[in-house]
Length: 157
Image 1 (tube, rainbow, N blue to C red):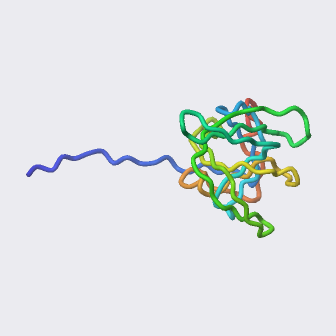
Image 2 (cartoon, rainbow, N blue to C red):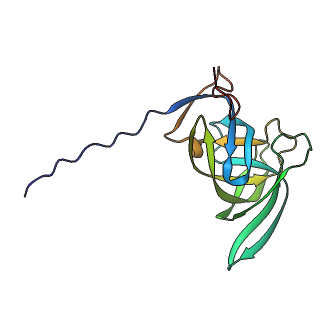
Image 3 (cartoon, rainbow, N blue to C red):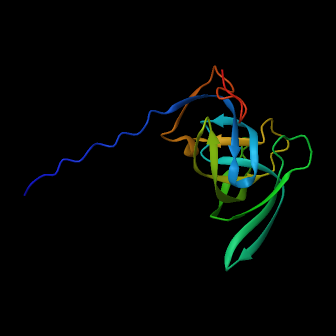
């Protein structure tokens, strides 16, 4: 039996980001949202003002209003298929069942799909939390840095 030599595929090295960053969620119509990069959180969370469940072609969906800047200004209404509903424990130890959706996240010119849960984060400093599952194998966090890639559309220094 002959062995065929195949090239070894090497993943690109992880990008270094700060403890807070500007992200884009292009599939949800969000060009820029401030996110806390949280290696202590397993899942990512996204602030929604309201959400409503419905079914489309027999599958569970959710319609929701995103408020990217936390200012109470007009948000962006969006819809997504619900992948799952899971119990999530917040930083105060409270458990709640939340819907999870899949969407693209973009940071520093690179994008990939992530799972994110929808939650009321109005009392939090950041409307989005990027958890370690979304970062795995792609990002390393330097806690001494912030906004490494600048706002989406800006050239980072």
